[in-house]
Image 1 (cartoon, rainbow, N blue to C red):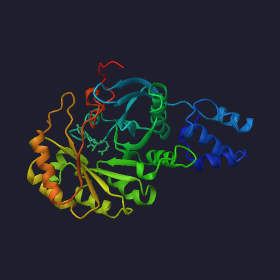
Image 2: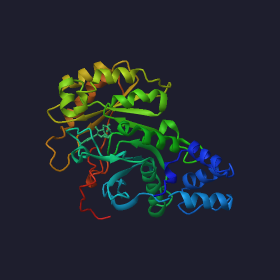
Image 3: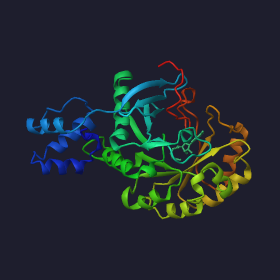
Length: 351
Ligand code: SAH
C-alpha cells in the first residue's frame, strides 16, 4: 500500500523532493494545491510532469470516505460519519457560529480513557488515527460545505474534542497540527487550534517543547480526587494535582489562557461546594471555564442539572473572577454534542 500524501508535513515533503532530485518548488505548489485550494484532483499546474508523476505513482491521495451526514434540524450543526480503509468509523462535527464553523476532530477510533460520562469511551480503543485520517476529516468537511452550503466553507477553529484522547496519539495529532499551521497550506492560526485532554500526563510533558502555543483544554470535571477518579479513571494514575502542576508550567502568551472544561452532572458535581473548590483551585490562573451541562446518550445513567443549579454554579465561580461560559449543546438532536459521539451508534435521522 502506498503511503498517504496527507501524512506528510511540509518538511517531510521537502525532504522527499530533495532526496528524489525533484524541483524544490514542488513542495509549495503541492501544499498550495491540496491544502490551500483543497483540490482533490492531480496537481498538474505549475509543477514539472516528472514531479507530478512521482507523487501520483508513489503516494495515495485518497481521503476518509463520508459514510453518512447528519444535519441538525435545530441549528446548522453537521455530523459526519467517516468510513476508514479498514472499515472502522469515526465522527467529526461542524459546529456553526455566525455563518462560520468550528470543526471538532476525532483523534482515535474509540478511546482508552473509559470516562464514565462519555459515550465514546463505551466503545473502548480500537486504534489510533493516522495524520492523514485526521487532516482528511477537515478536508472532507470543507469540501462538503463547498458542495452543499456554497460560500460557507469557512472553518475557522479546530478543536480536538471528538472521539479519542488526542494526547494518547501525540505524534499523529502533532503532525496534523503542523499541517494545519503551515503557511503554505491551510494556514490556520495557532490560536485557532485547541486540544482537549483528560489529563494524559505523558502527552502534557511533551506539550511545551513540541506543540507550544496551541491552546490547551483540560477536562477537569471535579476538583475532588475521589469524584474525579469515578469520572475519569486515568485520574488514579495521573492525579489532578500533578496534571495542574505541569499545566501551570506551560508558557502562555499575554492573551492566552487554559480552558478548563467542567461537565455538570445532576446531584454529583453541581453543588455550591463543588463550585467553591473549583474556583479555589483555579483562582489566579490564566483560566477560562467552560461549563458543559451533561449531554445524555443511550443508556447513560447521569442527568443534566436544572437551569437554576447551573446558573448558581456559575454565580459561585463569578465570585472568583474566573471567566466562565455555560456551553449550549449544539447538534444534540443528531447526537453531535460533546460526549455523544460513538460511531457504532447509527441513528435514524434523515440526511
Ligand atoms: N479525550 C479528550 C477529548 C474528547 S472529549 C478529553 O477528555 O478532553 C471532549 C469534551 O467533551 C471533554 O470535555 C469531555 O469531557 C466532554 N464530554 C464527554 N462526554 C460528555 C457528555 N456526555 N456530556 C457533556 N460533555 C461531555
